[in-house]
Amino acid sequence: MMSTTQPSPDLAIPQIPSDLSGPVIGPDDPGYDEARGVFFTGFDRRPAAIVQVADDADVSRVVSIARDTGVELAIRSGGHSNAGHGTSDGGIVIDLARMRDLDIDVDERTAWAEAGLTAGEYTAAAGARGLATGFGDTASVGIGGITLGGGIGYLARKHGLTIDDLIAADVVTADGRVLRVDAENDPDLFWALRGGGGNFGIATRFRFRLHELDEIVGGMLMLPATPEVIASAIAEAEAAPQELSAIFNVTLAPPMPFVPAEHHGRPVVIAFLVHAGVGEAGERAIAPFRALATPIADMVRPMRYPELYELAAAPQPAAMAMRNMFVDAVDRSTAETILGHLEKASAPRAAVQLRALGGAIARVPADATAFAHRARRIMVNVAAMYERLDEAAVHEAWVAELAGALHHEEAGAYVGFLGNEGEGRVREAYPGSTWDRLATIKRQYDPANLFRLNQNIQPAAA
Image 1 (cartoon, helix red, strand yellow):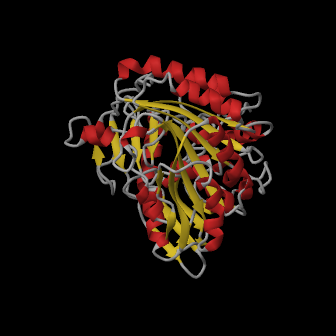
Image 2: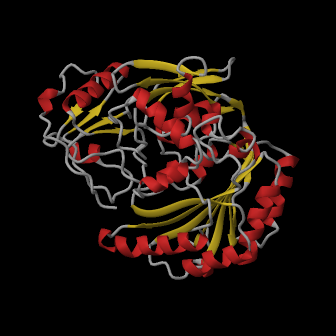
Image 3: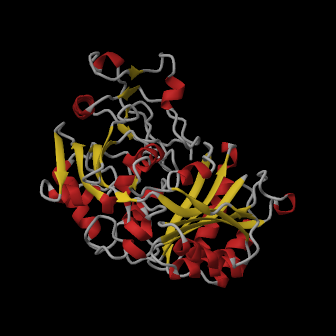
């Protein structure tokens, strides 16, 4: 996880205009170490400058500097990239965190949101009006990164991916232009933005569709992890009404106050369940999960949707090894494999996350967006989070071994969860003709590959 990026050409801070609306932070400035940090601590990089942009004009001017000087350019929304793409050694970081305007149109049920907002901030503001757009499962993630990757979260089976509610976006392209793209204006670019990552420009503002969603039945349910419970939980999630979305984390029980001491360090399923409705329908949808085993902890209840982000403990910064894939079944044998490997994990936090897909995700044609895995049934993340960087090889090996044991042909990958795994894995995120179409669009909007600190798609040959 340590940085392997080659430093960019030296960049003197005076080359960046002093009249930008947002501040420029260099290595000698107070707050530099805090400003250069990203969520995953295995990336200890030192940018020549961090520009905390305030508006599209700032973004455009910094993009032009990077293009004209050849300096490496990193873009940060929330800083949660598993590959450390929100920072650079010797380059410029465009930090969008100051761009946080949110304009909600209750009557139209749409919102214009700047890319520096987090999923939790957007959800809290929309929830105060009884509305929601689906993002992921972590409040601190920036809406820019999760939207461009696809967005698979608590409302995915009911309302689809985040990109399925994306109506338009403002994008600063490699030539410094600011484009408003949608289904009618630059439709190829709009198609590519919906799942193609940060390859095509810097999305500074998104227009999202909002759904009426005041209360839900949801929360965290912790069950003892046995092969039967794991396999049955997935089966119930796939059979559940589309209003219910489920994320299961198979891990060793943490020593939390609500977990009885006899379960500490033992395998558990930490299930986050969301039924996008209230009353008896929600309770009926949750009941099969409670019946799988006597719950160790049961925090599922009627609540306002934004409370779900507050209920889940905020993840703490750490280094992480992770592999992502899709599978079409999790049976008893698969569950036994997961549990067997968890017993051998040495990381302070090791887990296998299982997300049941289907529902509204699968109703969108595979070629309608750059996210082409519409028919896949289950997404798997194998992860080990740790603090000591000298132990990275041990945890990477554990993750690789378990991921290899779970891997099936045509496993694919979700670009939002990829690390530094090479072009082959990026291609797995874009199967079939999707890759070729993205490469052609990349050639049109970024022929020199200025935007390359991402899960990179090379421009197609002329």
